Image 1: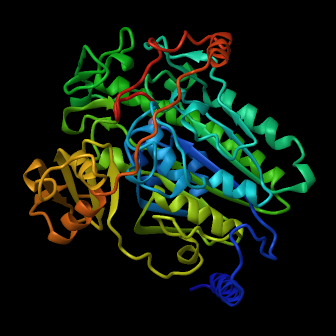
Image 2 (image 1 turned 120 degrees about the horizontal axis):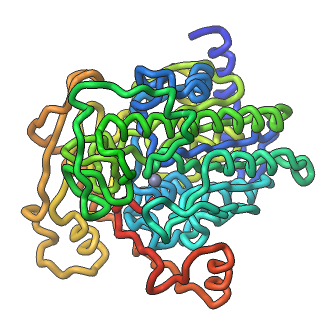
Length: 490
Ligand SMILES: [Zn+2]
């Protein structure tokens, strides 16, 4: 341990000891100044398409620079492979089966409990969110606790006329404007910025495309378009670009979208640290989920599985005084809320399903191995170390039984679960099928028994409809898109 790290660890121990002697209510302000907090979530960003995570091209200089001065977690997992369930977990430290959004991507609403933004706001923070994804409109309840929730989406998606989005430049400029306004009474800020760009269709500015010359070989083969928005062996309808049909062209466009988002993330980081210099700023960058780029025959889509290419996310943490490091231990979206609160100087919620990573990043203390879940409702994977269990069949029935919505005698039969298990020997190896471990299966079954009732989104009022029309959206219901749980809807 370096002298500097040791000093931080000692300071941390003193802070913890102080808190233990004088238990304070959750909203009490500790003596140390509260830090600003910036949470960046990038939609559909695979960790292995970031240079700092091993991508061969230097397409992410800004994220790489952030990682070089912070803690990069090599094995971070998403709560789901769809936008709404994952973001609800990030904001609550509750798994999809523990929050009222469940595994539904856009048709359900977050109610109950206290969100990360509500916790910051109750502690005197100025709070704002800028999102670029149609699914994250205020109706799903993630706006709770934000004094400003900016979900104005000016651009119609290329192939889905009822979906709207906002690109990285527009989102960043709005967020920077907000940062440059003085905070009321010099309050600290909590800012969440969500970037939509790596989400399909892959349409980066042409100047970014030119940076990524095509590769030859197997990746150059053409793919046929699919009839629908998901499925194996072809290009999903929402991704299809006219005159573009080779795998390599889509992969290069995906990398270019990431490069474009990276540029604007750099601008945002610079502004946040300038405006937040006095208090110091805690920064966390992650993704809501990955993307299938050919794994198991699925191309350019997400939401259909919980396997590693979809569950694995980048996770980069920067805070004043933290020494740069790369960590191998697994972390998860459930860790975001407790970690950001504690690094900001606030208490960790007692009802968190995740861990605060703060004590582990200020020291070399190992993060304990846990069983962590990625869940899309009809499929759940349980990850532990270099192993995961993939459960298909009817995992939903288990929650129904636990919640009294099924009267199957003796509980849901195990024969309804289709269980596969995989292990890898090293980070470089692929996954090999193995026998399921009993301890993982038991942990997964206990998780499947959890079932908070899903809350459907409210029907839009006449006022809501008028506002949507004014913004250019088509009239809701029955035309309003209700993406199925886990389908690529955002
Ligand atoms: Zn997403």
